[in-house]
Length: 224
Image 1 (tube, rainbow, N blue to C red):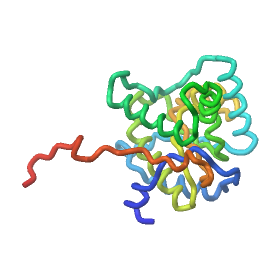
Image 2: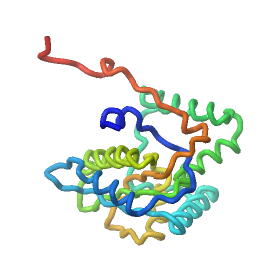
Image 3: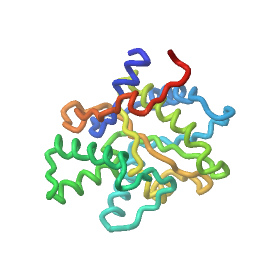
Image 4: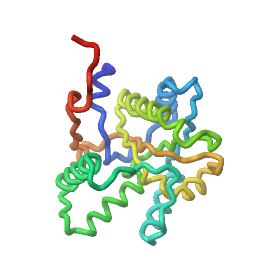
């Protein structure tokens, strides 16, 4: 798979096989990913990889808090668009696609709640990569760098037949992550990447989100 094919075919996987992913493969992915560019070579990203019993405990405690109505405490806010915007429209359109292929009607609150819980369980992936940065850094500074390393992780995973889903639900109960990993308060939790072998039988894995035409948001200057 060449780099352009990887970029164009990568998509979010929301249904995984239970097969474990070896530490050696994960380390190889990270060793490739950290070649991402960063401002003045600061390399601000820090990874916490969880699997096995630790991941199961995180999933369990996330769901317990969610069902108990305990407010989430995200350390990085991902959702930030206004209600009446193209960004909100795109998010809604994706949700409609998911609910359609999953056969979840709008009025079925039980199925919708179950779908939400899957996000808090990292979509039942066997591995979760938690990305954090040191709190001594600015709030915005490391985000571009971490975005680059996240993309590299997702692309490198394809080489090993793995799927990924960048998602925040698994880490918005940040205290759960800290309790089970010992991640200190000096580190700010940004995001998670669910990692595993895609389950081809899951209808949600057939979804491919739309992309706007490049000309719709690009201006050109100085070209004939």
